[in-house]
Image 1: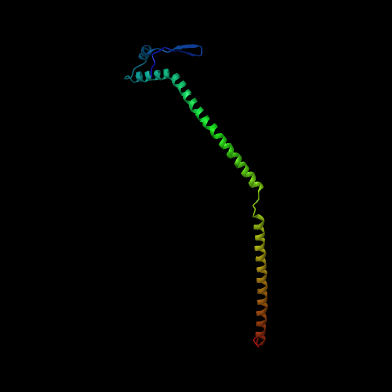
Image 2: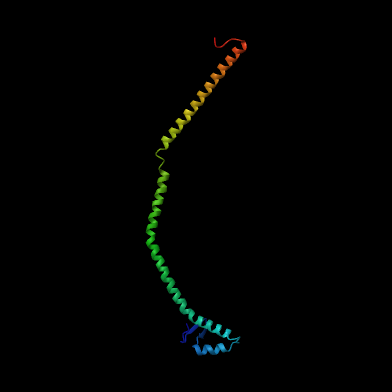
Length: 150
């Protein structure tokens, strides 16, 4: 983790020089010491801070490789999705342009069913009227005393 080499870091106009481990240890000793915990934590923080630029560049390189892999897979998948999109578009257009081939037959069949239903209703009303008329005559004849059977 810790690299004992010295590096120069430029921050704004101020040049900060990173120290080898001995210099870092001296600087750490100047801070207050609470049972050695602050010392250890501070040493860890300084080591992590010194390793951060290397980890950053490694992370960027790793991420770049992964993203290029994803990009390659997307380029491979793109033609399949474009083909699928064109087929879906064609299907939508065909469904709008094409009507049901049995639409006319179905419509005619439904008209015939409705006509038959109306005819049946008319026939039933006609028979109902005939029965009402027949029973009315029989009732009148019975009331007058005429025997309808003779």
